[in-house]
Image (cartoon, rainbow, N blue to C red; front, side):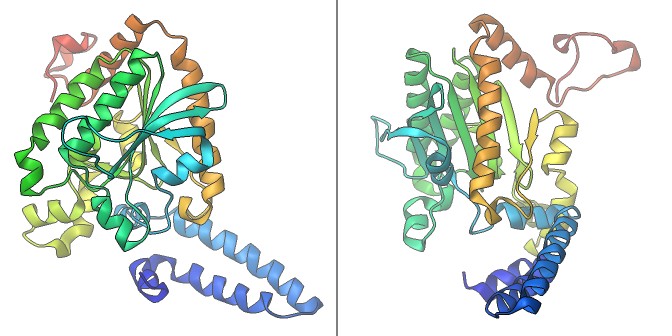
Length: 334
């Protein structure tokens, strides 16, 4: 995407683009006056970015989550982990590049990393199916999780997909079945699992690697049963109403933390993760280390019980006020 196309795509960032252009122009000049002007414009730029990003609408949040410069799984692997050894294939059909997996070291922790990968260039994106995994991708993910459980390694999953691949071949190879199977197996996997939505968290494609002891989201990501465009097409019969759908779906990190769907929201650098990969990686790394320390010392039986209870609580509602105080098994679950 060209610079002009990107600016049109992120129209809400127009005041930021204008200040950045002004700053670039000043930085090409010499003299004391230019230095003072640069200092002032930098202050204005920081204040403007803070103001713009504190008032993002749900649809604008989607545009940020899909930003072409946003860090992907491979970027976080490079920024945070040492001794990463990639593992390929599902031992059944093939190697789906939309799922990246491998052993890694995170300071004192040896872990298994699994995540959606979109690719940067058009060639990479095509090879990765734009982050939409096939059944062999989810089978690869599960086989690596089971390998991690065998050796007592925690699993870290990075979710960043508009949804599972919707093609005929994927359906013929059991797309829906393998996603359901992954969710079932992850619910009882005997090792700590941390899932983080780093960009898009779309539909069953996200849930296929989304069941864990802790589910977190980056601040400017979204996590939803359907994309805004898909929702608009069903309810309004036109993708032109995607902005309305985004507002109605309540899928931002703030909403989902309030609803109890996610456990934590990880703050992003000023202006979003796409503006500072290093800082985004550092914040995510800090969260993972802190959470791993909480989980690795937990007995397996308690770990599985709490994981089960966590997902039972999502979507629970009471039929009447007299039901208050009952356990989750005693009232209906949506």
